[in-house]
Amino acid sequence: MNANKMPVLNRALKPLPKAPVRIVHLGLGAFHRSHEAWYTQHAGDGAEWGIAAFTGRRPDAAVALAAQDGLFTLIERSGNGDSFEVIGSISEAVDGADVGRLRELVSEPATAIVTLTITEAAYGLASDGNFDAGDAGVAGDLARLADAAGEGGKPATPLGRLVSALAARRDAGAGPIAVVSCDNLSGNGDVARRAVTGMAEAWDGELARWIVENVSFVSTSVDRITPRTTDADIAEVEQACGYRDSSPVVAEPFRDWVISGDFPKGRPRWEDAGAVLVDDIEPYENRKLWLLNGAHSLLAYAGLLRGHTTVAQALEDPECREAVEAFWDEAAAHLHGHDLHIPEYRDALRGRFGNGRIAHHLSQIAADGTTKLRMRALPVLAAERSEGRSGAGSALMLAAWIDFVAVRNEIQDPLSEAIGAANGAPGPERVAALLDLISPQLGEDPQVVALVARLSGTFTTDTSSKTVTPAHLIPGRNS
Ligand code: CS2
Image 1 (cartoon, protein in one colour):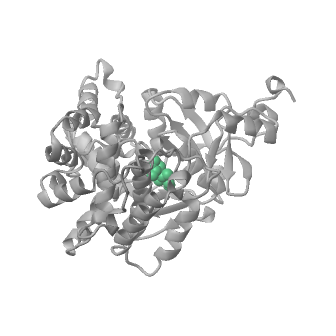
Image 2 (tube, protein in one colour):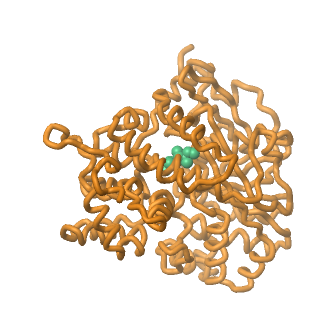
Image 3 (cartoon, helix red, strand yellow):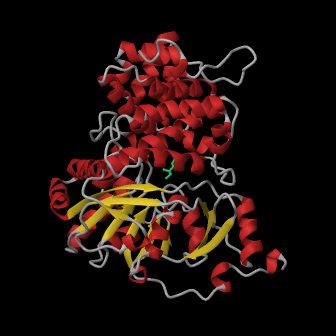
């Protein structure tokens, strides 16, 4: 059929009625759609749980999705082929700037949960993990919140918007609620608690107290590799499904969701769809953050330096692969628990990363390095050093980032300006200044600075003039 004559997906199908909104989500992006929206659709009682999803900085995703009644196609892409499923759990797609609608929905007693995929960098925390009222976004929103007559109703960051919406819930007497972070941060529920109560405290102490008593901050470990949608994906859906969908989302078949915390107003039966509810989330979280996300960051910086574009390509390069295995060896030494199944988990990751049909771009993963490396490299490096080993496998991730920021013109990072300034410092001072942005503990440790400086230059595309030896094979580096 001629593509122009093809009906849009919500006209081509006879969609089921929308579920009533009981979940409000901040961060309507591809990952939310491939993960939570999928789990909610597959919960046994999913028909009772609709999601109102708000975008972050731009309205585009909400506009496109609203035009399709919130429906979109999930393309599940395995090594052998694609399968297609229409996801209907998003009942409402809203521009994040519409804070009025957010406040309205969060004030509804029927709303039980606010979920977040707002990115690691959006929690406004300083490198020591404490709330940073001086963070530019936080400070701007505090001024807006205080200015009730002007922009008071219009905070610009997800955190400010959430705090404003929780104030509206308190004012409406709508009762307790769960806030569930789905960002890749260790202890993400606690991080969200510190960020939300920190901001509330700086604005309105009474609100902060209400939040402490009424908001349950739930921690989760989320997992599903979700590359950016391309025009080819949109064309593929037209061909295979016979309708037009401006917003399909691509994901690997694997998915995982580990959840820990209380839901005072209930939740969908996500466990029907395979989610796991646990009391102690830390071991699962560390396994995922270190082994999957840590390896991703290592592959991103090393792979880009070696001239690769995607995760699968980087993994085929023995230099990158060996660096990943060495990092995994270090991380595995600090992952304990009989049900973690580390060898099987590593093996599964080799398969997932190696799925060449998923074009997961390294440049997408390379963004926000300062925040990500703090979670992905640091804990393993610190654990190795506390046991008297060098931590060269994790230090190599830091060295690759340092080399990467030296050659990239535009760095996407909340600290991009400071990175630019640190990059100008001479020799070893430069390494220390850059490490300082990830954590002052690193930049001020001369041994770590020297180790990272030595490892810098490991990854290069110029293989003719330099033999690249993986860090763990260099004599003296593990001692
Ligand atoms: C990636 C993650 O972009 C990144 O930093 O490491 O988005 C990763 O793909 C997901 O956490 C997989 O679940």
